[in-house]
Length: 209
Image 1 (cartoon, rainbow, N blue to C red):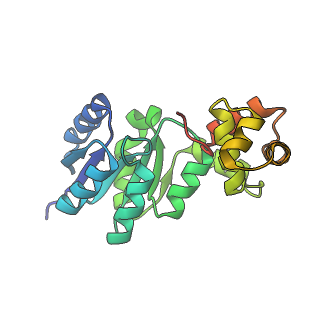
Image 2 (cartoon, rainbow, N blue to C red):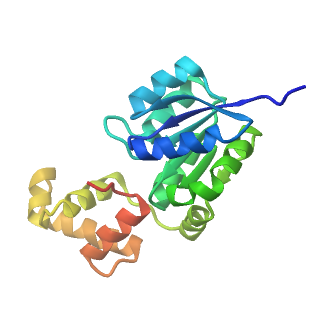
Image 3 (tube, one colour):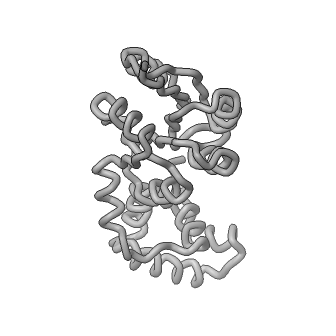
């Protein structure tokens, strides 16, 4: 009896990466590429059309990102097996994706070595997380998380706004903004506001503009 073929959907807005993944899959006797998509909306439509055994989903995409698409697909298809792909090691995004049911989380820099083995493992019902991302998650266990307001303040600071400017945009006092920043720096163990922004970007607390 022949082994069952693993059908794969690839979702990424970079054509070169999709082509590379397609070539890798085509070289595997037990895998078949059934579709490609370039953003979250297309991913949802393609998933519904093909219902692949495994989906490879980029985290950062235009129009609708991968984590949003993951949530929609998992809601309609709770048995879906989705591997998130990212350039960044941010633990916050990884945690969100894993809580929503992602079956895997890989760095794009490791796809050449880990892609096909991860697809097979996920297809078999296992969860696979890149060691670098797993380490980031472990390091942050028990660390203080930022409140929604603090994330909002930090996002505006990252965009180049002063404390006074942030206060005006959020309709809060400048002293309140300063208090939020003190709390943010304490929770992130940051030396100053620039350091806080850098840490938040690295961890995926705020996005890269």
